[in-house]
Length: 174
Ligand code: ZN
Image (cartoon, rainbow, N blue to C red):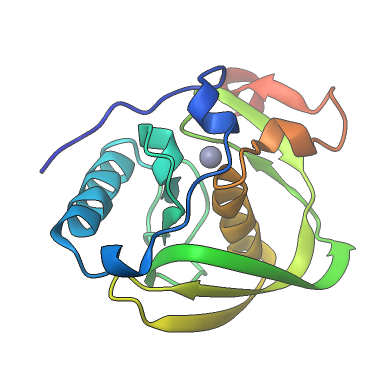
């Protein structure tokens, strides 16, 4: 078990395009360790997703895992499957913005911003063993995937605010 430091907004790694995982890296002990570290860090910080750049590893790996009970988001009604998402490609199926939510980010601690994203997407990605997969996502799951995949191209939720007024400290959000 290894909890890593989560780097925060302003750190240059968060603004870089992450490198894809190469064919010979799939199923390797190094990739397994990276995923384990990301998972340990995400759970300790009570996140529902994490991307490798957030622990200062500029690689295209993210984890999405919505537990039944999360103190930061209402996740009860959602899928509780764990997704290890590598080298993802997003296809927007319906660009109509969803209702939007107050997004947070482990790299922007204590702050929430109101963001609207396309409501329906398809994501093609690889698992840690190199198996190709595809998922159709809508609403909250589509939001979480888009937020995490944004980290792999150097974007943060603050780049997608509906309005700059829609940014606040968590104490006001509550
Ligand atoms: Zn984030």
